[in-house]
Image (cartoon, rainbow, N blue to C red; front, side, top):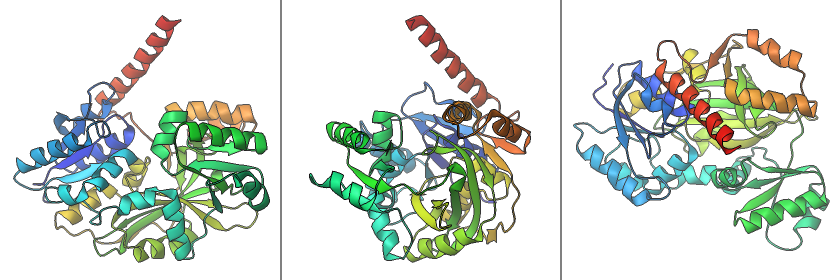
Amino acid sequence: METKHKAVVLGNNYYIGLSIIRSLGKEGIPVAVVDYQEEGAYARHSKYVTEKLIGPHYSKEPEKLKDFLIGYAKNQEHKPVLYPTADPYVLFIDKYLDELKEYYLINQTEQGFWSDLIDKDKLYVLAQQHNILVPKTIQVKDQTIIQEVEQELGYPCIIKPSDSSTFVSTFRKKLFKVSNREELEEGLRKTKEADIEVVVQQLVQGFDDHMYTFDAYLDQNSNVTHWLTAQKERQYPINFGASVYIKQKYVPALHEIGAPFLEAIGYKGFAEIEFKKDEKTGEYYLIEINVRTTNFNQMLTELGFNMPLLAYKELTGQEIGQDSLKETTNLAFHYMYEDLHASRAYVKSGQLKWKTILKTYTEKRIGSIWSFDDPKPGLHYVGGLADKVRQKLIKR
């Protein structure tokens, strides 16, 4: 395999970045990592990292980061392949796409496309245009919002942001679940004071194991070349969070819905559609699309679906072929640290029992950070947790 192009990974303080680094580095691809600080960026300690760069902050100094990246690429013999590890980096790349693609190889070619898919309002409009089921949504525009919600949705329902990253950084949760008028009014007040745009949305009924994913790679002609499906078992925060325990499970209906939709909208590169299956009707509702590498990428790679590698190979002019997983392996991905928090919350709320949770620890699973073959990131991660504990004890 040709590896003369470098991979540049934006964001090294989360295990998604670590997974991308390992997925590429194990194939002999030179990996340069970029972050705005050394502290907490444990992924940059992987043995597969060939260059460690510190650049401007993506939101505080986006213009400077753009110029920093272009300056780096100008000094390379071949165009690097650019990888975002989180939505803020996706939005950054999308904002400067026309400039960055002159110096980097990037899956998406239409500026604004990624941003529109991250924006839930625009995504749902697009999905409805293609006859995809989405939760019923009410815009927060005027004083009649309370009456509209109670007449058209009822309780429980959810208050959901258009910009998830800003909402999470402000409230430390992905959304507000509301069970009555008082909670609805309180949630709307908080988001208004924080100047965060939100919508009120139908809550599709079903426990967290009713959440599914369709993970696919689409080539530059917007054809699905690789795909597989998975089912969540636990997430954090519980009920409305990211996967902390998820299994590969073959669900053909997800391909039947997801593949034609992604192809029709002209998607390119890796995409993950999250669906929720209504426990009463059995229908699948599109919840969101992740346009960056999924948090359980390590599990996909273990199953033979190395999505970052597919992007690298295609963008550097190499054959990628086609593949799909049409059987259930039950291989799981496990992010133990957040799963411990999630498990306590599940048990406390009566949704799960410890016996059920502990049973999954005997199943075949892929971890998020620790690797005997590449131990330094795990050691730095544990060291960071220890520092946080010490700081809390000092404050007491």
